[in-house]
Amino acid sequence: MNPSKMIPGTKPRHYSSSRVFMSLSTVPCHAVELAAATGLHPSTVSRILRQLEASGLAHSTATNGRGEPTGWVRGQATVEDFMKSFGSQQEDCQRREQFRRERERFQIIRAERTLAREVVVLGSG
Image (tube, rainbow, N blue to C red; front, top):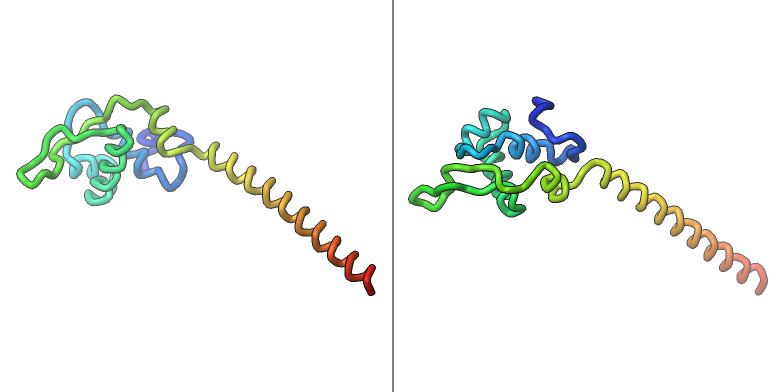
């Protein structure tokens, strides 16, 4: 994987999307050409291009007789737009930290309720 073709801070599950996005330019190219440039399978590149298009990060320039895209270019979106659409590792860390805090609070509440039930049982016996 060529690190220069990836967006820093990209989530691991979006490395391939990052590579395809960074390989796009204003010059139309076919998914097969992008596959060769990124080292990804052509069908993977085609799927990623459709996802990028849905996010406004890429668009097709022409279609063949079957309505399939024959050329792709980068949309008006920037690297920052990609990060917003596909997230970043920092966001993942923030979500994990929030989950950890919420889990801690839940465990404290559960322990307090368990203790309160034990006090009631001991008090009535």
